[in-house]
Length: 141
Image 1: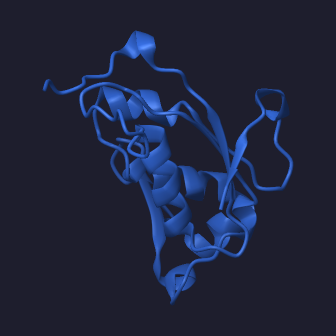
Image 2: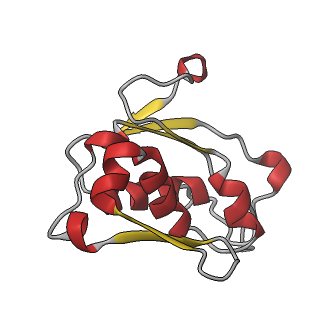
């Protein structure tokens, strides 16, 4: 019996929608990262990009547990001296909740070309409406 290896040409990609309302941000990000990577599929192959498309709605209603709203910071550096920028998650969730969700999902993907390609298949919306209704996404609980 031989081991099945998926090929990039034979993968058919579906669309999934995840509602993040009143769910922890990290739990939602884990679910999205697994689908983007393709780990939910029986024909998962680690070295082949066999993931699918994910739409996350209601990112503004995602919950951060504990004291993360006060203690957690989103940090990035411009590359110049003194170029460290940091934003508290309370302000980030109020102004750009899509960025907070996308940053959480990106950190859970592999840091290579497969992860870079997978993050392009993620669509995040702060509200309940999304623009991919024509793709007929499947709802995930």
